[in-house]
Amino acid sequence: MKEINSIGIVGAGQMGSGIAQVAAVSGYQVRLYDAFEGVAGKAVTRIGSTLEKLVSKGKMEQSACDAAVRAITVVNSLEEIAQSDLVVEAAVEKVELKKELFRQLDQLSPADTILASNTSSISLTEIASATRRPDKVIGMHFFNPAPVMKLLEVVKGYSTSQETIDVIMAIGEKMNKVTILAQDKAGFIVNRVLDPMLNEAIFLLEEGVGTAEDIDNGMKFGCNHPMGPLALTDLIGLDVLLAVMEVLYRETADSKYRPAPLLKKMVRAGKLGKKTGEGFFKY
Ligand code: CAA
Image 1: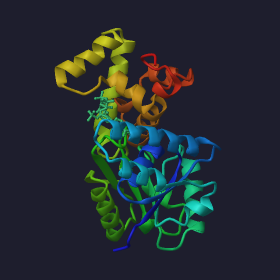
Image 2: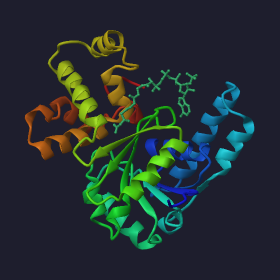
Image 3: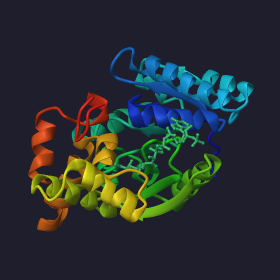
Image 4: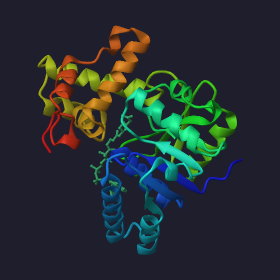
């Protein structure tokens, strides 16, 4: 089985920086790249302060914190990312952008490099079609916040090989995640179940069935969810939820997956949740 020592991460936003933290704490050498200058550097600073907090709570040794921060190198090009044993793409959910990234990574990387995507909605088979190595293209779907959530959903594209799956499952275990395997179908496993529920909560709000607080409290205290569906949508990003719902709706042509009009309107207004300071709640 291919040995993985270094992981290159493309995209240093919420998910990319969370994945970088998980990888570094798990003993991998990490290269972190973001197309926007300064973003990756800021992510490393943020990871450093998160880990320092764990040290001050007595949950991490200072030496482990220092080693994890040292293990992350900010790089400024895809050429440098492509020197990694595994590349994990965590860029925005736009199919053409992802295909172009994978086309470039395929050209720049050694033939045996595995190319993974953290996509929550886009077909792995389609992403893989931009490369000459569809057997080595796979989904590594982390959950937000990646360092806290225990799950890694591994997604098999049409041509992904069993060997590639085995390598990624082993990495998931080394990262101390519970791994599940999903086939390449819209929403995979978790978002197929979760996102229609979040979308339904937005319909409830729009129809005036309850206030945002009451809808969230209903699910928190009636179903023991750690956060209400509207607060969770704010955490994930309204744009991310809309992207998944649009894929589910388009792929199935089933009206049960139609995105709530209020969700569309809020995305158009730039109210994307926590990351923009406002979604269903203010931050
Ligand atoms: N790194 C390491 N540890 C972290 C951390 C980080 N970045 N952020 C938080 N933590 C730790 C904290 O130290 C804390 O640890 P202790 O309890 O041991 O002190 C613990 O995580 C909980 O953090 P907080 O106390 O700050 O907050 P909380 O108890 O309110 O929990 C939460 C926050 C983990 C987000 C919780 O509310 C939760 O589980 N919410 C649901 C999240 C969820 O469902 N995510 C999946 C979204 S779907 C998705 O991501 C897929 C997609 O494609 C859309």
